Amino acid sequence: MTTSLSVNVNKIALVRNTRHLGIPSVTRAAALCLEAGAAGITVHPRPDARHIRAHDVHELAELLRRDWPGREFNIEGNPFHNLMDFVRELRPQQATFVPDGEGQFTSDHGWRFPDDAERLAPLVAEARALGVRVSLFMNAEADQMAAARAVGADRVELYTEPYAAAWGTGRRQHQLDRFAAAAAAAQAAGVGVNAGHDLSLDNLADFLRAVPGVLEVSIGHAFVADALEQGYAAATRAYLDRIAQAAA
Image (cartoon, rainbow, N blue to C red; front, top):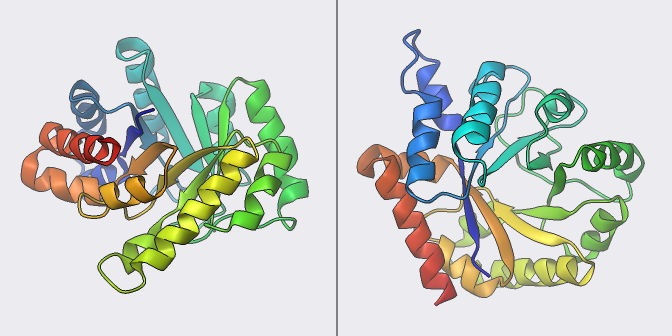
């Protein structure tokens, strides 16, 4: 099994939105990443449209449907805000449910069970009935993984910022152990494992070596920083190389 790379293009839209010229192009960036081997594209359209906007989501859905039918479109967001409208209309391959507040700076925590179970379950069921795989954004807590499966999730996306913050410090191994345990618990419960948030060229291979069975990583901020120096295609290949190193 090879871990898939999904490129999050939010930060490209953020740069574009500072002017009214339509550049850099979000769809052009996505196409270049896909041409270089990315397995999919991720967007997180927030209610305030501060980066990805509704037209981006539709244009990317059309790009993938028309030119890259074998690749994945992953739409992230809070299902109690604006996510479900996109899921119902576009039916992406994957929807990642994230418990963000409307004005939240960036994702910083996962769902909690049993607290969120009752309200999540019908929306998970609705998305799955539309043929959309559902991934729940979760903290690396092994005792929460079976509960994610109980509400119907196909996958969990492990929130990796605590690992990224610990990388290069004495806390690194502790965090890797936490994530490995959470991944093992998810897999034992029949849930696939994705991962994302602050993964980078520096820390990605170590993470994948220590946490076996990760199906997909979604990488945006660090990817765009690298692409500013290397270009979209070279950055995509660099991340694919790190994934290959971890699997070797």
